Length: 472
Picture 1: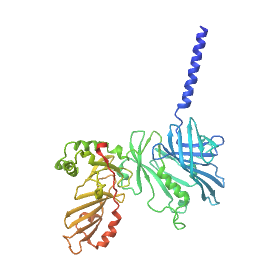
Picture 2: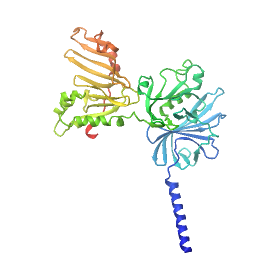
Picture 3: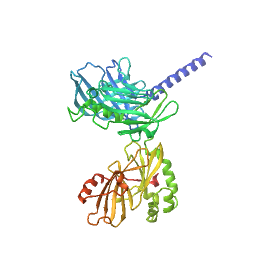
Picture 4: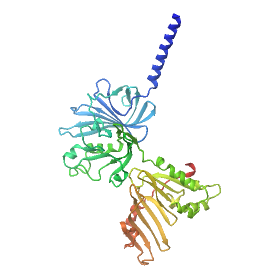
């Protein structure tokens, strides 16, 4: 009886040890994002920020003391290679020297560092190729020893790297966090570097200059908000001293492009949600394919707000080709608001490569049709953020209308138009029109040289390699 009890206890102990061993090896490590400090003295502080791309991180390492004349600064972009390994290359090491006024000068030591971070439960081990025999162990930073550089409002927070703690000021409201460069603001030049705001209504930020949607946030009551990053649209530093911004301003400005908010107080942030075309237009493409499964009729296509060109393409298929091999799609942020549009066009080469026959955009978080084109009414994306409409009205009249797509709207706002119109003036047939006059009758008669000069700005067409619908 005693022997059986001993055996049972031994088995239980062995099982406990085995489970503990498995947990130690396979347990998910603590969330790597946040502030870490060197294990023994916590003098060296590491900030890990999730990058915009999945499984990538921006890592900043420096000394926490304020009274050092010189500090080491390390910056890495690390990629998750395994469940517990982050690797980096092109790592940067800088010697930062401070002056009496609180300014600083950075001297680059190297920018070709490689290494890794081994993530274990409750700790991270850093190995760098420049000093491979030294392994630095980090633990979660003690708030009493390190400076808390978390900025938060009632809905979300952002983490500013320790490296920048002396250079910024904040302005915070219930739905907004704004970051300012301290010296520029003190000198009355604004100093605004970037801001992040939660908008309940997409229309409220649709015409915001310098704004870009970066994701969505759902609060504790289930209310959805657009999260918008804003950069300044004018100079915010002392340009009378230098045409280039102070290094501290540049660092803060660039931080805005990689900062990832974190939901707090029951809110949850979803990075890139509501911005990626792959997730936004899946239903549109399914319906589009369904509408074209039978040989498309031009009249029926136009009733469905689709281009008649799919009928023409279907009539000219070669043996072995299908319609869905010749029609393709891509996602592209046409108006620079951070939200992809869906572009559908013909897969071809030459002057028509990149032609857009149908375009969709997001209005109040729902996909909406923008326009349809054809052989005499061709649409292209030009100069990154404009839409060029090439049209022909006869042998002696043709031109290009340039539009911008209004944010959170299907409206194409007219910018400028160029045309050749031999019907109106056979001796001097070149005409120019601006803004609201573009679709009207107010044309300015100009020289051919003027047309060529001003039109050249919009001649960079995006030649998309559309993905065939047969592969959707």
